[in-house]
Image (cartoon, rainbow, N blue to C red; front, side):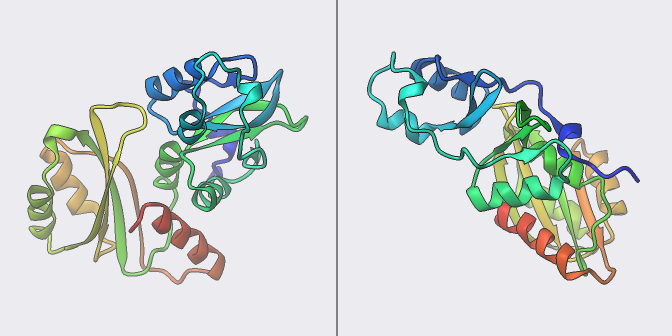
Length: 225
């Protein structure tokens, strides 16, 4: 199977800012794209991420980003790195997106953690005797007791749940469930029958290598499971 690498996951919807842009524009774009960080470029060179915290410290709306101390200049991946690297970097730095650079160290785009999770869900991962489901739904449709009932009807239990805002849609949420079974087929069929959208799934009962286990633990840490 083709291994997902950073350039396969580039999110074309999230634009970079330039050092010549103002903090007012940066604040507007953070809100518009529902992200906590955005990359800042000088020509095609990546210079760091602008964050909401940077903007709180800046009291001049017309201040240029060139005059704002940017962090995360070393937080990036190469275009051919595996998506596990993106998750690990996001976990270590607590960011929602990771910039991607080409062989000339020029900026190509960003990969968001939610896109990475979706890719992760397409890869068989051994998780021990448990499974993980990621559901996307309208905020008004969220009822953990209702979802729990559907899962328990399939002889499974929710061990933990984590709700996060969908990065692409302000009216949607992403619900990540850790279940006490790796057998997800019937559970998914039930949830889909009741209109829930499953965006990623991970399961397996095989032995895992130490390296795989570390990566999986990093994912669970990111999801706060």
